[in-house]
Image 1 (cartoon, rainbow, N blue to C red):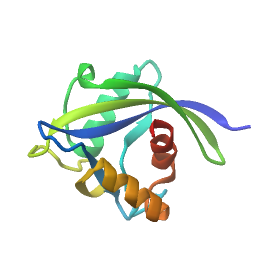
Image 2: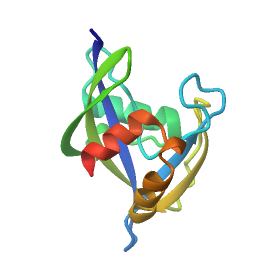
Image 3: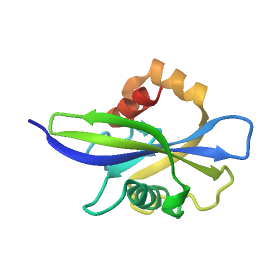
Image 4: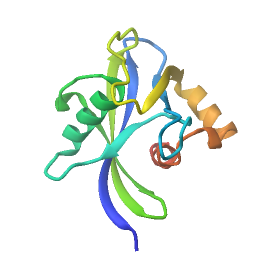
Length: 146
């Protein structure tokens, strides 16, 4: 039986444009899991006593250098069941809207090496044509949202 954990996934959307664009990021080549693959979600596990919104704010700050309060995260109302051979994660999903010209995008924890804004249609097309280029857990959440 798999270890059950609680996690979060955040889709970061571009604010103030007519196009619906998502911030996608490429994992560092030094990551133990899925090195060099792309992800459309910022995600991680909730710490004991931490609300899902607090976990979302912490993960976005750690991975992308974006510091915003927990109140800025909008729930999708979808909890995705994400699993591998070891864990089964109940992943609560959120949206965060930020300006596309945000100068605060940095990768402080070294987990991310690149990022780009993609139209939702482009994400769908890339996922359909090259699933192997994307992080498995992110795909499981994306599929649940879609």
